[in-house]
Image (tube, rainbow, N blue to C red):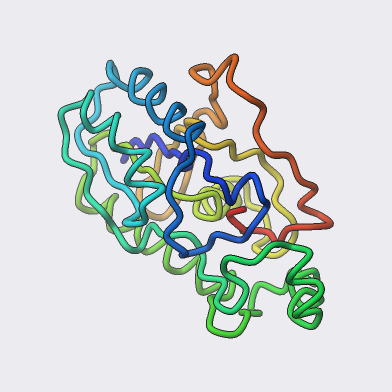
Length: 221
């Protein structure tokens, strides 16, 4: 079995603005950098063999302090990117509702096979994420990895672990820079603990949104 410490990237300004980040290369804001620093301190004593990250700036910046503390390179992995939202990448929810009402209506149907123009469907995204996890499990069986990635990736794995359908609103909290411990053999995912933010106490509250009304199931906003 592969042991994974899965981390969502730290906060960005677009998180605060409730924009769809998708695969747009957005950096951390000051809060995100502090979250990353605290994450690095928290992970310093973990028996970690390797550190992987999505290749986008916000995840690489989140991984940086942990890589320094653990004395490990941060290996960028394109398959760990957030879902691609195509035409609506970078847009706020009100702008999507106003400029692309048809796309918004399709999103709210939670159809796992619908992809916005130029983007990925939830099913295509799931196949990419699970393929990446299977590859890591095959290459690093018996090891412990830190993987810094995105909210949508974590949502896919949570659904798989809990037997939830691919469509429908998200059913779990995925805080920025939280720690989610799972085990996988590449075929099954077992959650050990989820949304651990003990290292982020006394920090400003994170953005809150109602995903059943405002946000598609895997959106990294």
